[in-house]
Length: 110
Image 1 (cartoon, rainbow, N blue to C red):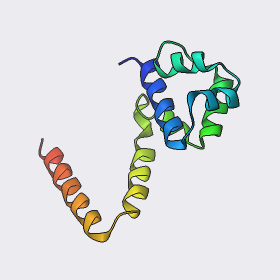
Image 2 (image 1 turned 120 degrees about the vertical axis):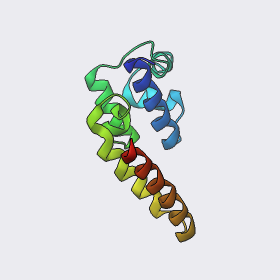
Image 3 (image 1 turned 180 degrees about the horizontal axis):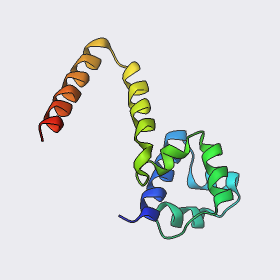
């Protein structure tokens, strides 16, 4: 998958997370829904100005959009996962953390 496609998918994910349709987001950032559809499919790209506007409308961070294509975005993902864990019951947290510890131990052995 190309960088443009990954960024488009990230935008789409954040748009859906926010509960917006393509039409709603397109209107708020001043582009056509057709163009936004092409961006989400990785066919077109947004200008910096429109991309920043989209990030602000979506209430997300640049890491949420670029996390799949920038190597140093990982700390933001770790924080996001930590925040998501906080919303779970203690038994679910413990189960997930046990799996994560096993994965980390396995990765260190390689």
